[in-house]
Length: 243
Image (tube, rainbow, N blue to C red):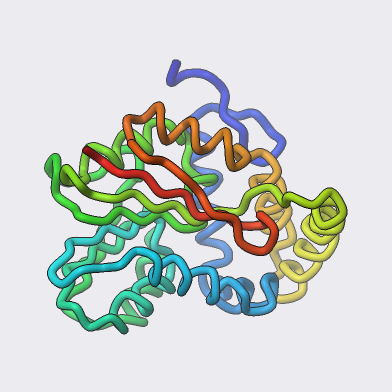
């Protein structure tokens, strides 16, 4: 099964090549990543991330893993809670981790280079697992979900914030045009890397919709799985419990 072709945007490539190509995309845009997020979402990505952290109800001394942490947007919101949490910022991309380390010098944050499909942690290590705008870039989504279950403690909670499918057909049509035409144009203007943001548009289109992802999370072994839509479903937050 692992030798089956994977989708890199609209292309089908080998699993190893997909991983390499995705990392090349993020290496190429790392130094403008935060600026691009603000421009593409008109700053609303900060509201989505804050909403995610607020709904997590983080408790004092919770051990938290942020997979695909990137430059660390979520870390900022977690640290504001001041609850003495140990936080692991995990990313496969060295450039992203470098930017995260520059941004945060808090010794509560441990920066780890690792693949979401093969985390270097013992079973039942974490109270909360977060993956934000990263799951669609993982080569094998189902493997990453199984790995998230493995590293969570019993009673631990999985959270995924990701682009999804708008509920309104009109909004969906407008959103498709925006992704296809405007986002690559902005990407070319700001980063001189149109292809990276063309991949972004294609990766969103190829990603499972809300109900498909919900089923994947259930299949991985999580319980009480549900999701909430934001911005009419342009993004959604999925949540599941390990029992």
